[in-house]
Length: 265
Image 1: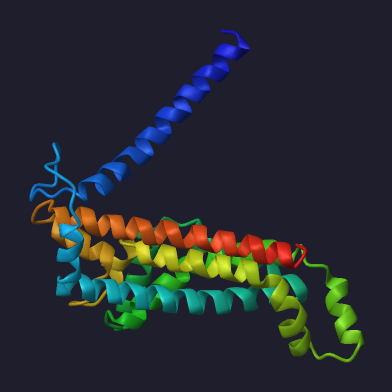
Image 2: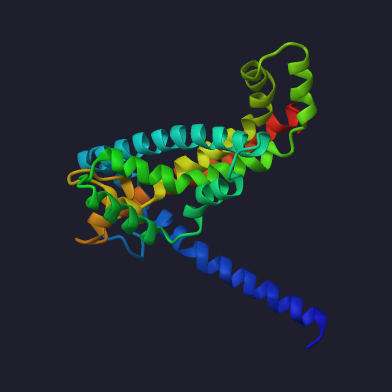
């Protein structure tokens, strides 16, 4: 086999992998506009009927509201802790720095189902019942490593002498952070927050273990609907999720790049 043949096979294999990954997504999006009551091919026409049905489904609206609140709170808490932890680990000498960093990043290395069961068993041993607070804590634990990795990668590229120059002119560490460090760090903060929101919004494995009774997020609502049948409403809801969880990171990436270009980084 010569070199050109090898590269051709690699390209073909790559194309097949992408088709395998994205064809089901394309099918879901296409069927969400099917006017037929059967979520399958052949399509009988194009219609927004099932999106209108979604807008009138109270259970789905409640699940969507819960997912938005949960995602926003997860992003806020994870980003705040992630920025503070990154500053402490990168800018200051903290005792046990390597151990703390490993502990903070560890959840990303553990399968989510193992993390979900471990947290649930731990809280059961403490006689703590399932609640929205537990669900939020689980999402924060799972998304925090992603925020830390993104923020740290940006923070190490920010020159320390810029901060030292501000402090030499009389600025306090807090003033230096808000006037110098944070504006330079803002693209990574935005990207980390969007990562946390998207991961939280999409999560189903941990959510199934941690959510209290009567509380549903969009993924768990879809899972519950699939137990009965595959309705066109599920396809429409899937399309909304795809638009939200793909569109937001792309928007955030574009904003982060523009902000990074303006800040000269």
